Length: 390
Image (cartoon, rainbow, N blue to C red):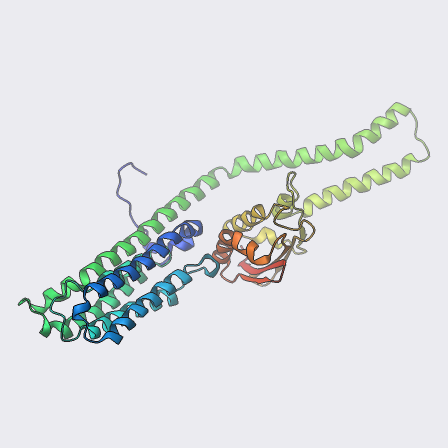
């Protein structure tokens, strides 16, 4: 990319979400989401207090505040990593809360609202829309903002006869919806640009991976050859060296030769039947052994993103202080178009604590699979999910 070039958003940037293309980035944005919810509640509360003299219907003012609090809670809860992905239902619930709060705020000051510039509905709605930026696509954020702005515009038109400043009604509407449209546009642009940048980076990474495929193949071939040489050095060479040193074939050498041949054959067959996952899990240095049940070699049919998510999870649980080393078990079953995966692990403390500590990895698994189910008992955590075969 040329230095200083303006970033261009991909056509798909308005469809995909930042949470889909970068789950861990969305996880890191959670404090910002919580801050957006808290700021919205604070702005609404301070605005209501400062306009206390204009409030003619107290129940409507209190209900408007409660609605803002509810919308903020929906935003924060829907952004919980253990509930990922943040779906469109959560975004539209936040939008509904903003719209209802706008109407109730107008009802609270009906007949006694001389200015529109001190109404908090537009600013509060815009702040809540900012909280959607890491989780929803740009097109949806823009649509949500437009719907809420339309509701606020209708409310302002209905209130306009009571305003004291003699200006066109359109001016009141512009003043009321500008904070919402500005913050909503910022949220949508962030979502689109972020997704575009990540997708371009992924495209370049895939290109580099394809270029290095030939070199990787040579490296793997050398690794396999080295493994087989190791087997020969461990089993065959000592046997023949002993025969040469003795200078004759003893009575038990035939049985020994048969044992060496069977051991060599078993090693080569196991190496041929091993999937990428079993090779990784059997690698030296792993502290938590894992039982893998994969009769159909379904692990080899997983795509790169699925392999990365799965391996990241196993790297996270490779700690005897967290996981019972006798209980980690993985079962893969190939279906027509999907690979069903079940992971069972007993935890050293409680399943709830383990679930919380593993939340970043569970979020990634949930996002790349779309159907992660987590069952927990007192000390056992069971994950069930599936992937498309590639």
